[in-house]
Length: 212
Length: 212
DNA sequence: TCACTGGCGATTGTCGGCAATCGACAATCG
DNA sequence: CGATTGTCGATTGCCGACAATCGCCAGTGA
Image: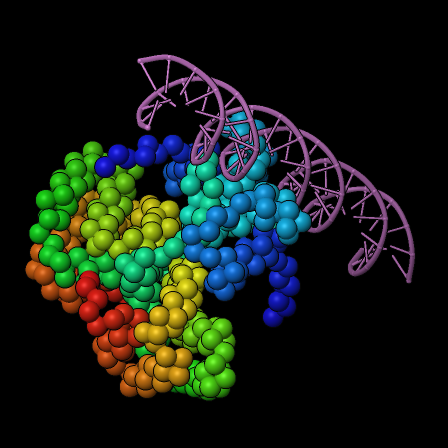
């Protein structure tokens, strides 16, 4: 299978760069993002930055006010819950498909991710833990073999990274808890019962007091 | 609440135009789409067309091969099923939220849509029926009050229009059946049981032999 | 003092141009 | 004669420039 050699386009690169900057809080929520400034800094044209920004907009990471300027999205509590619910719905749909074809192949990779997460957590490496969280859930979603589902899921990626970060920072969540939370999820997945996995996912993503 | 007066940007307009052209099969699946040609025809710049095309790409309506040209997506049977499953998952998630807060307010609007659909079906106005189908489901999804969910749902809009059209054309589906199918869905919705609505939705979107 | 108006800098919307890269076909070689 | 290479038109990737529009603020008059 001769892989077609992925060559990232310039807007792709800019998009990814800005994205990580936002997620690392180098670009604070609420701060203005000016096309020309970024363009000059990265030494690319404004059009390129522009395209990257519109992508970030569809991901919900920046808001573009026409004719005015762009702002890094500041997620309210409600919006966070909203994003979490969407993510939950998508992942539950994926899990149902995974279970229908048997989840055995997943246990190995997921366990390995949890191992790495444990190491990252003891090292207090927050960035790594967040990445591994994405990898964990992404592995599940991709295993469903539903391309559109996975693609929708990944558009929520950025926001979720922000969500986890803020949860951790507000100490509603302990870094050390993360591996355990995912181990629980994996255990439920092993049980093979779609209903209980759905429940576990719900608890994983949403607080108990969340109202539908 | 002073609505900010939506002024569609030029790319927006181009995007919508191309979209309807594709959905109306004026731009056939598989045919090439050349930026410069469209630009000249609509008397706008290539950059504008370009932006519209990238949006269509994220909606899965065109495929852009880097450095080559763009092609109107030709959906294989599997891809159609894939898109349908994604749509089903999202709408089920929305319905659960709707039911949790009571679906009474929905019955009126949905009945009215079905009425209009009946009239359109007897008039053999396929385009209208397809539009009303999206309106029906869109009304449900928006009623859930989950912004992200609705936004993800609407990115699948284009593809679903194509799906319905092809189903109708292949005569796996009769135009006259459409209102009845939606009435069934509405009835189940009235029952208030999430499980049975989920089943009904599944049947609505997917063939019985669909494998998860 | 305060509301309003008009100008100014800042920022985005749109544009057309140049260079890079592609596919197709012709020319060339073994 | 088949395979490889060189060339050419077509098309996109990226760019910088100009025009439109915005928010801000000083100036004006009541």
